[in-house]
Structures are given as structure tokens and as C-alpha cells.
Image 1: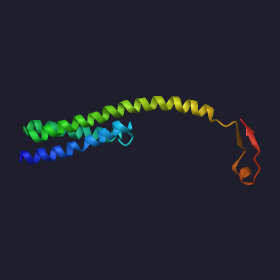
Image 2: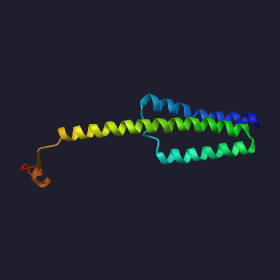
Image 3: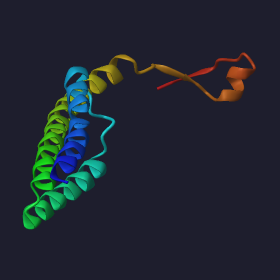
Image 4: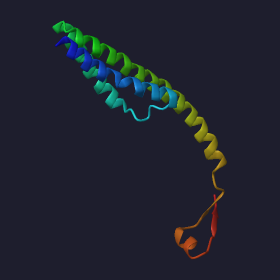
Length: 121
């Protein structure tokens, strides 16, 4: 039974490795919500504690490894979200200055009728 538990746990744990590598390569963790990571991490932590209390090496070990990989994704998400938000705020600020139109049509009806009486801002 222990072998079956180790094989099952290893397979489910290894599912996190490709996702972690993909997130690292693409520098994107946008597909992971914070709520998902928090709930998943809590569940894995509780399974790990359960395995330790039951002295079940398969449950304890595989959930410890899963938690380590999940924390890797969390760390990468923190790092990338901080870098992205810093870069985005700078980019949006400069882009909004350079792309701000100087005039706008008075209303959509005038545009449809071919009158483009623009209003200065």
C-alpha cells in the first residue's frame, strides 16, 4: 500500500513541475489566482500535517514536495507581479501622456453624420 501511495503522490506532485517551469520560462503567472494558491496551499499543508500525525510517509512526503513546488509558484508570482506592476505603472504613465488626443468629437451623432466638429480639451 505504501508503494501505491508513493506512486500516486509522486505523479500528482510532478504535475506542478511543468507548470513551474512554464511560468519561469514565460515569466507569467497570470493564470494563477491568489485565492487558488491560498486554498491549495492550505489544503496541501493540512494533508502534510495529517500524514505526519498518521506517520504515513507517502502522504507526508508527497505533500511536502507538492507544497515546496506550490511555494515556488507563489514566490515566482510575487516576484513577477511586483516587477510587472512596477513596469506597468511606468509604461502606462508614459503611454498615456504620449497617446492622449488633443481633440475629441463633440458627440457620436456628429461623427456618424460626417460632421467632425472637434472640441478642444
